Structure formats: C-alpha cells, structure tokens
Image 1 (cartoon, rainbow over the protein chains, first blue to last red):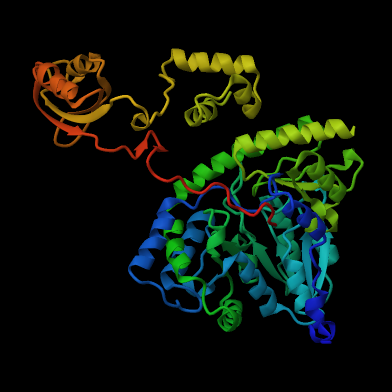
Image 2: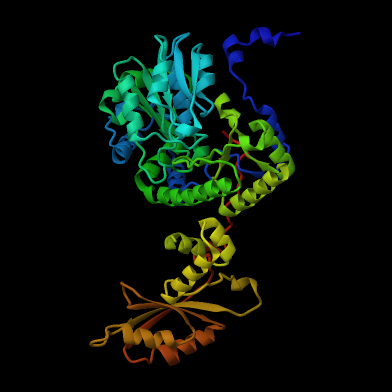
Length: 388
Length: 163
C-alpha cells in the first residue's frame, strides 16, 4: 500500500484547507438555491473586449507571447495606471500574469525566505496565507475591526512588525468586507513603513469598484513606490474572470525575479486574453462606469435592507460585497449560514471563510440582478423572524 | 429623490410597480408616485412601450424606413413639414438627420400595398417633399435594445460559490 501521507510534501500538507469545506458541499448539493455567494461580476464581458479576442483568433494570434506579456499590453497597463491613479511606471516594471492570483503567488515566492513573516490584515481573500505557508513563511494575521470600518490601522501594523517581517499585504478595496483605506489612513501607514525594509503587496483588484470616493494606491506615495508591488487585473473591473488575466507592477528588480518564476511554471498568460486586455484598458471606461452605477444601486439597496431587518451592516465603499454582523442571531457565522441555507435556500458565506476574525459576520455578494437580490432579502428577513 | 435612478429603472422595466421602485430606491411610495407623475407632466417620460415580435403572431405586418428629402421653409425651418409628416398615424417614428436626406421615418403597416399607397398618395405629394427612398424591413434582429431574433446569451452560469 503506497503511503501518500509520507510522499506528500510537508509544506503542501500544512496549507490550511478551506475551513468551510462542509458548507460548500452543502451548497453544491442544492443547485436550486438562491446564491449570494459568488466572488465574480454578473455582467458579461463588454462586447468590444470579446470582439477583440475573436479578431485576434481570426488573424491567427495563437502563439506564446513574451514571458512578461505583450509589450503593447504592458504599455496599455502603464498608460492606464497613470491615467487612473497617477502612477508612473515603465513597461519594464510590468509582468502580465494568469489572473491577480498568480501575481500574488509570484510576489510572495520572489520575496519570502523560510520563517520570514507576512502581515495579513483579516478578514481577507484566501490566497495570501496558504502561499506563505507553502513557501515556509509565517503568516501573521491582524484582525480588522468593525468599529474601524474594517480598516487596518498604522498602529496595528506597527505592533505586528518584528525583525522577521518581510511583507505587508494590503488588500483594499477589501474582499469580503468592502472596506477601503482613505488618504489619511495611508499617510499614517506610510509613516510607519517608510524607513523599513518591508515590501507592500498591494492587491488592488477591486480598485475601480469604489463608490463615492476615488481609489488611492499606497504606491502613489513617493516614499513607498520602490517598496510596493501593485497587483491588479481584469477580472473584476472588466468582468473578465474566466479570461484569467492580471498583472503586477513594481520595482524592476523584483518584477524580474517574479518573471523568472513565471517563466518556469506558466510561460506566459493566455495570448487571446492579452489581446482582449489591450482593448479593455483603452476603450472600456464607459462600460466600467455603467457597471459601477449598477453595483452602487444594489449596494445601497442591500445595506439598507439588511440594517432594516436588524443585521447591523456597515456601508462598504468598495468591491461588491456587504458584510453584515450576524451576532444578534445568537449563532456562529457558520451555523447562521447553514440554517439560512437549509430553511430558506439562500447561500451566503460565513465570515470565517476569510479568517478567524470573520466570526460574527457573513459575506453577501451583490453581483446579482435587483430581482434576485430582492427575493434573497425577502427570504433572509423571513428567516430572521422565524429564529427570533 | 434621484430622478436619474428612477428613470433608469423605468427604462429597464416600465412594468416595475410603485412598490418595487420604492423598495429599491428606499423612498416612500407616495413620493415615487408623485415623482413619476411629475416626470410625465414635464414630458420627460413620454410613454411606456412594449417590444413585440409581430412575426410570431398571425397578424400581417410590414415595416419600412423611408428617407425623405425636403426643403426647409423660411422662418420655420424643418419643423412645420415635420409636424405634417408626424400627423399620419402610420408614422411610428420621425427623425431629422444628417446625411443624404433630411428625414428618416419608420412606418408600420399591414401590407406592402399600404406602404406604397402611403408614400405615393400622402407623403410624396406634400409641399416641401422633393423625393423619398423607401426601404422595406426584411427581418428584425434587435428592437429598442432587445434581441428578438438573435439567440440570447446564456443565463447565469457562474459557480454558486466562489471566494
């Protein structure tokens, strides 16, 4: 009998499995349920982008691109970052990746040595911690708090820094909370970091989905530009999740090493998607604006409805999630979500899926039509009345 | 109340009920009702229409686009002649356009004969109309933003849960 447990790598085995596998399995058995559980937009990719991809296939653009991506796409990324956030880079500071998630993987692997620490504000997207563990690094989660609107504070970062700290992850606008950092928050954080040899991985995948405020990147601070890897992508902004296209921008020395890793395990991002990406960045501002308007209407609707039915919900300024506090139900997050699923066939995600500090909360995605949201809100309200 | 939001919701779904609109926008039903009345009175909202694919009914139905070359009148420009054309009930839309003719109008009729009678006996003889070009509609693919003869894109095919 082969002993796979002995064969498998220790660090791979140490990767934390998703804590809520059981809940996911329950949802999978209930295909007719009303889901508010997705982390991707409901809009179709704008037609101009799809048309560009089709055209690239028609004229036979079906080969590998350069490892770091098409130069024209990298130039388009540079222009876009400058136009949107006044970030100034050369195309040589850019690597095109298979989604933002590959960029996160590359950045952590390019930087981290065994036992070095990565500060991760939680609740957050689920990939930073397992990749850190896989490399033999040590994840240092910092819980963010509802009373701070789920913003990480400079003080909290300062307290978490040790002489082993290598990376700080900033993931704003945040999945799952919808929190954003304001200029004054960034200023204080920069003050803590500016003289330290700590690299910021700024995951800005939701940067274009902010409401009533303009997104600001920590890389816009001159003191931080040389210590920040900006990660962004096409999935959320242009509704292109299935295209698997993202990028990282940062100091050339780091990007070059990331490219070396990328070269060995990926070769290059999908060529068709890269051609489509050029059009997305150059021609689709109006499409993004239209989607943002729709999200905003749904966001306001969900926040109002949830608060009205007695689930305290802070008003998120970014992404497409709301993160209601469910402690008034007297249940744990997972229990709440399971009961809601069983009795009303509505699927929302326990906050604990995004780190321990998500206990007491649940993530609701509003990347759905208003009709869908209305029905779901009606059922959640009924559920709350029944468990009173 | 945010009038633009109300208008956008109605543009997407003119059948949305007052209750639904009030719920979505977080306004009182009475405010939504008076808001809509106000927009109707100001002629911002000019009508509520249904997109029908007549090809799927047993009704005879013929549509045509007609380009009309016309001379403007002193003082009135094109407005007077446009008014006269618009009065015909067959005319469903009428635009002053740039390009090779002055007006583009669309007409809905039952038969081709009706269309040619309309052009020959009513439209072409009008004072100020110098020529017409009639284009019969062979098949409608998209009307008022609605695909009526094109396969619609797949419904929500996302995984029910993703982080």
